[in-house]
Image (cartoon, rainbow, N blue to C red; front, top):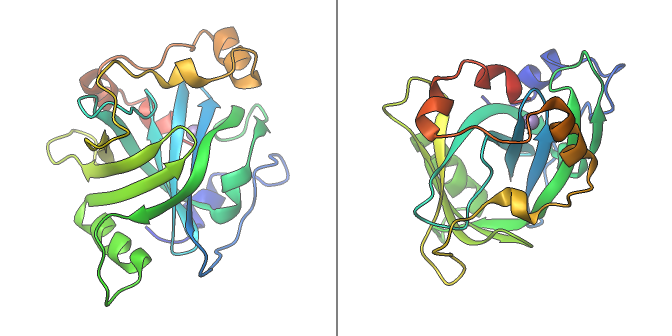
Length: 216
Ligand code: MN
């Protein structure tokens, strides 16, 4: 799962401006990014820095600040750390072709602290166990979240992105699309393709094989 082999296999770096990428190690704060991506279908890519790469999930409906609103998150291949700042066009014919923009970014930390271990080691162990708890310090996404692997789903890479109940949580419906620029290239691309509306229910989304092709 670790490393960038799968990421590199899917892409031709002579044809896309996406970073070819390297594994980076640092002692600074861990970063996260959420990219909004108009590909074959509009979706959000949720990425957490861990062991020098970005652990990545494609979130069809985008994140929610409402704890009752669990969002399907399909785990995809690790992306290079430099992907954190990628915005722009992935040319036609390339994996994930379409428009990408940064929807939110910031630092994050593990929720569970172990004085004997680095934050990142605790997070990696949680990732392997299929239940990851963390605190986001973004502009839109703030406070405690969890990523929990679904045990009963048809798809093997299905997780749920869940907001914990804290002072940042909202009780009303949360639609990530309401917090985007309506004049952005991603919005225009999504509308042009007629894919402006993300997937409907979680159950339908899990069963759609097309999910496997859209996540890049
Ligand atoms: Mn994507």
